Length: 172
Image (cartoon, rainbow, N blue to C red):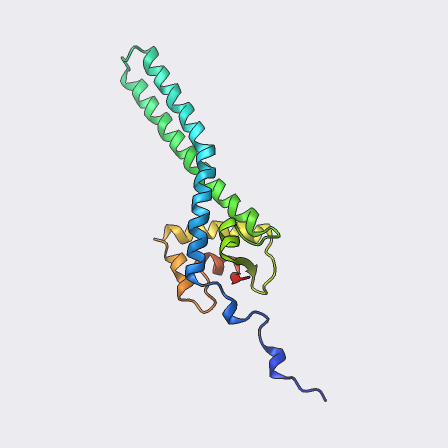
């Protein structure tokens, strides 16, 4: 009769391998700089075109703009701002989703600090799981970043978005 050795029933992932809050914070700062640059490259030309178009409209009107035209310009500015915000959000979500589901298992920031994103078994995550995690990051941020702070206090150092997607962040 075979007996089970207690060493064979331990988890495949060592509890000392979880990436802590400070590693994750360092990665967020690096990624924030990179995403900011990416967003600027995409958004700045869009906003510039809107601004130049409105400036030309005002100039063509000889500086005399009716209330209806002014309201139309304000609506145009608001639409451009909303478009810029949505573009920025999509750029960020795609950045995280593509890189975290890639063979690198992490963003540039995560690679720089030596951490990676895995499923609960320590394996590479799919694009769908990475996308769910990225959307969860938006929720973590919306609730005053409490979702991020949870990583400092949970057993497996998981943030809210990790819990939503069923992922871990591990040291390499």
